[in-house]
Amino acid sequence: MIPQQEGHDNSGFAMVMKDLYGIFSDYKDKPLLSLACTQRGAEMVEEYMDSHNFVQLAEWIPVPNKQPGLDIQAMPYYIFRNYDYPEYYRDKSEEEKGELLLDTRLALRKMLEESGDGFVYSFWPDVLTLKEIGDPADIATYFHLWNENGCLLAKNIVAQCRQNTNYDIVRYAAHPFFLQGYTLCANGENTFFTKNKEFQKSLHRGYIGFESDSQNFLYTLHYVLHELKWPIEYYKHVITPLPFEEIDKRPDKEVLTAIRQSLANLEINGPNTIIANLPDGRMMTCCDSKKLRPVVVGGDENMVAISSEVCGINEILPNRDMSKDIYPNEREVVVITNDLEVQRWKQ
Image (cartoon, rainbow, N blue to C red; front, top):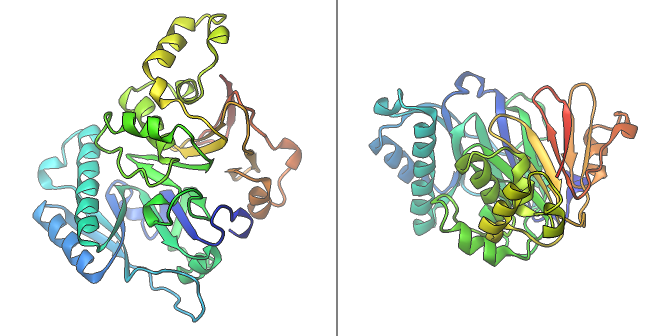
């Protein structure tokens, strides 16, 4: 955590854990609700879920370490609760279930926002989200994240040890962001924020908030892969399209021209690096068109990690073969498969 502090230094910590083990291993196919709230907020959520026929299966409420001097703006309650689907939804398709979970999260978020009683970060099977404001090291102490006690274990973890840089410090603005199985964090900025935002608001009911310009990256990833159902290679062509003179020389020029013309409002600008986790478990990274922000991929036989700075990988994988580290360039998409194979795709 310590090497990764940037932006508003010591301002927060957030993580999305996926493919959970430990205390959640028996409920991997059941949606897990992650929220931070007041007592009244907890009661409101319980009433809503009961009235909409969700059946609570399990609950984990962390017992914090409240030692004096910790820099954390703690909420009264942190609740992680597994539910079964309403009975009339249990035979629905996975796509229909996904739409129900999205609508439920949006409704809970709106309800708690209006009353000022909490934050709902994710409601999805096998996914846990935690966000808080304060010093990342103190947040880890508060939630016992330094302890390998078996409570919070996962195959895939996306974490960022800071708040956003350019906007107010609010919990929803903390990277990473999550939507229907897609997780994304970013290092940098997007100067096309307003253009992206106004277009994305018309594309999908789940594209809300916009507390950070980096949410644009997540919403475009979701739109390209989930809504349009395009291959991941086209994501890079949407956010950082090739110049027209280069497109004209390619055999797929008709496709790339159509993408650039129809989705011009999803193009991004400015220095940035994107790190994402996909619904199928793969992880990916790519950079802006000029490679103005760093990113590195490194690993060993048991783990592969992506970090915006090499010091982050040095902290968690100090004994890896550093000569095999990959520093993606501005025209690459790097994907880590579930078998830890590292694939490099040129734009």
